[in-house]
Amino acid sequence: AQQNAKKLSLLKHPKNKTNPNHNLYLALLTVPLSIFAVDFYTGKSFLQIYTSILNGVSLYDEYQSHFKNANISVFQISKLPAVFSMFFLKLILVYNFITIICYREVLYKKQIVTLILSTITFLYFSIARGTSFEIFEVILLLWFCLKVRHSRLPNNNLFSNSNLILFTLGVCALMLYSYNISARYGFVNINECLPTGVCLNLNSPLGYVSDSLALLSLKLSGYFTFGIYYTTTYINEYWFESISDFILLFIPFTYYIDPDLSANFLCEKDLKCGASWIPDIITLLMQLGLLLSFTFISFLGKLSFIFTSKILKSHDFIDTAITYNLLLIMVSLPVGNFLTTSSSNKILIVTLISIYLLRKLNSKL
Image 1 (cartoon, rainbow, N blue to C red):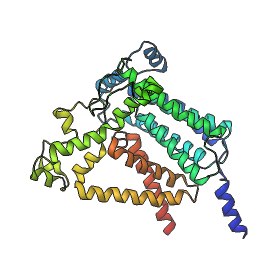
Image 2 (image 1 turned 120 degrees about the horizontal axis):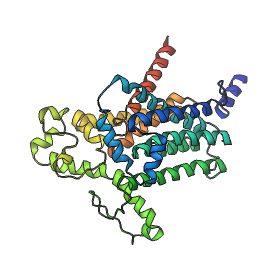
Image 3 (image 1 turned 90 degrees about the vertical axis):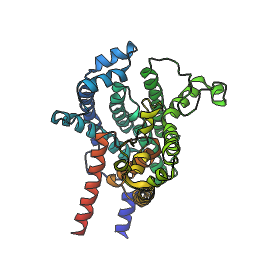
Image 4 (image 1 turned 135 degrees about the vertical axis):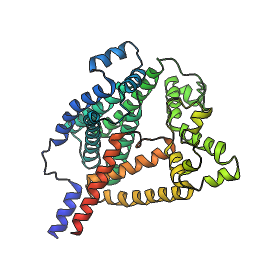
């Protein structure tokens, strides 16, 4: 009975053997990591970035220019410190969010400060590059952690003082995303239709509420609906053109059969893709074919179910982090390439899987 009581106590009140301030110390470590990574990938200091923002300079254009001139896309040994800086920056962000939001019943000021600092240093990289990828990661991670928290602590009110602050972080991330997109295009009003056919309509119900809200929804649509539009157009333009092309849909590695075929086939043809992401589902279909792709997606769904059941019963960071990355993969399939475009995400996935398998192997010995 005493052993069962101990187990229940551990599930309700997680006891960390590490220093209770370890989350904050890790968050402080992200400051030099973020500064170093930004300096490598953009060639700019904090002061230079601040000056560019004040002058209305497109940080995205400057980042693309530096990325090309410095050959950052080419593998170099000198690139490894920056890559691992981003890896630890991402790892600390995920670790702090999961261990604080998912498992702590009460969030004190120290935990809130830790979350804010981890978020700021991670999003500093986003601001410096003028990109929005990191913003979506933070929003998705925050949503995931809040859902896990609610499942574990159903009586915890979403709008309690601590959770209200967490909700505010998500709103701030959306505002930052809107700023990044506006800055990328020199703060010119977006009033044209997107390639998907979605247009800004200030007379819509959302437009009546707020012009800014309507414009934000258009910017979000540009990212999240483009992948769906691209996938359906790709199928119509290529696989439904003839019987032979339709058969290729079921065959793995079709790019070996048709050398002119690539994931960004439509972008090279006549579709204005711009900075929009090519959905991972297209790459998956080309590599595995339709049937194997559905089998792989079903396998991911099964894994998600297994890991979700596990994380609701225990405080295991590895299991929870793997569950979050499974969610990231599933979101990435119709939208873009959240995982394949980031070296730090690839390293994080490999690290989590390796630790999980090593623990499994160790438990059997």
